[in-house]
Image (cartoon, rainbow, N blue to C red):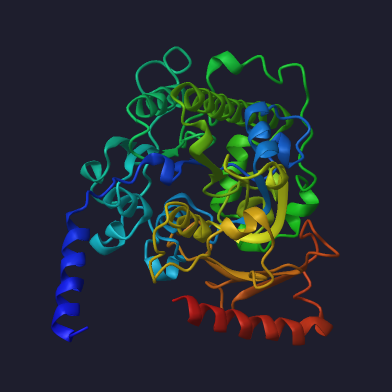
Length: 459
């Protein structure tokens, strides 16, 4: 066939293809995504994570029907920094948000998962605690009910006598879902205030009064590490830190501990009701079989452990989180699974990109969790860097390296830095600091060098 005729035929075929109607990408071709991010909820504050006292039936059901990650951690245990990590999939040293005032750069916001999903056809909603400085991105979402700062648990009236914030946000979530259709995939970020304290208020944990009868006839045991002995093992600067100051107003005596822990659990009961309500609405709207639900928290929380309250430091109480991913498209054989891999908050952003069928931005440092929903990954990480370099005078800055067996932390503001080393196999509660032992110095030196190397690689 002469070349000119062949070329003409090819050009005609290309023109014909361009004239054919292009089918819009329907919701059925990509899953809907509901991303629930709670606040200050430690890993063991769910029934499905082994807590035999707390009542979380809806979340436990989500766990039974999904995949539960038993070793989920945050890379920085403080609200703003962790939320930026969730949005960008980056360590703080890369995203640069290390306080409550710094905003996302235009490039960071443009490349974040909610903006990219919206640009690629998703209907997006943001409800709750935005938690990052700068102008709120109201116009970057199809549905916006976010707020700056902490807000209040009873924003519209007297404490305990007006609608609770968790219920308000629940209603907003249902309103968002009512505005969705099967013709367009959607992604909802629901960022709760619960179970965060109402800072500066004499009533720190403020649940909806309808839950007041829960746990009222129980005496909840104190955590194993809530003792004077454990407090005395802390470095001196932690004994006078913000975490100790807050312990005095939340957990200082048995009566205060019972009040605070029960109210903390009651706040989580409100979150459990929200999960149930969202799943019911998804069923009613016909979305349930194509909606992935991700449930996790921004950081952990000391519930009087070690004589502390709050978070910030590298103990497991502060950095270990719940994580459940429910994907109704998984076959039954892949449901009700528990994964032991070490997963991080930097992994949620690439997971959402992967779910939506979108390329993961090059600057993302996390890994998609989708392969772990079905099988293991021999190349999965076996360590991660912890960093808390937020400049707050009463919260000592720290950084560390966590492996499956070891937890190495150094507090960087002393000269020389104060180091601690815990063998998690022999000492899972991190009670015995090995950094002071002469025969551990070679290992300690290896961790110093390894952390320096890891830090250079994540910046």
